[in-house]
Length: 130
Image 1 (tube, rainbow, N blue to C red):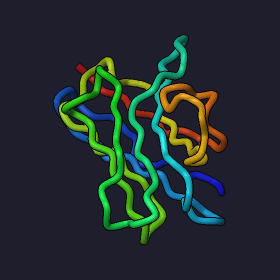
Image 2: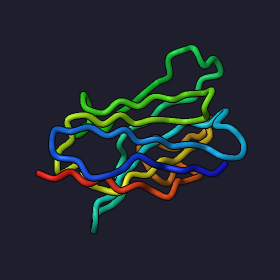
Image 3: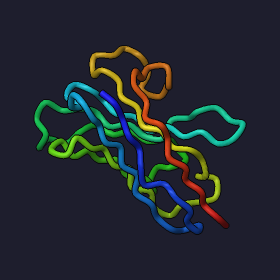
Image 4: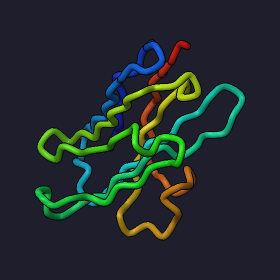
C-alpha cells in the first residue's frame, strides 16, 4: 500500500481545511489509520486515529489528541479507499506538516506512537495565519 496525503494549504485562524489520505495498490482492508503532525524542530505527534471495520457501514472507533478534540473529525470512505481529516476552527498552533499512516489492525503497539505505524504518506503542509 502507498499513501498520498493532500488538502493542505494556507488558511486564516478560524478557518477550515480537509485533508485526505488515499491509498494506492492494495486497499486499506485490515489497516487502522492515524494522522500525525510535525512542526519545525519538534517531534511528530499524534492527531487522530480511526479503526478499520470489517463492516463498512458500522461506526469506526476514533481517537483524537487533546489539542484537536472538538475541532477535528476523522472519517473513512471504504468505497474510495480514502481517509479524511476535517479540521475546523484552525489555530496558528495547528501549523505543521500532516502525515497519514497505517498500521495493521492486529498491532499491539500504541495507536498514539508513530513507531506503531508501518506505512506513511509523504505529508501535506498546513499553515494557519493569525
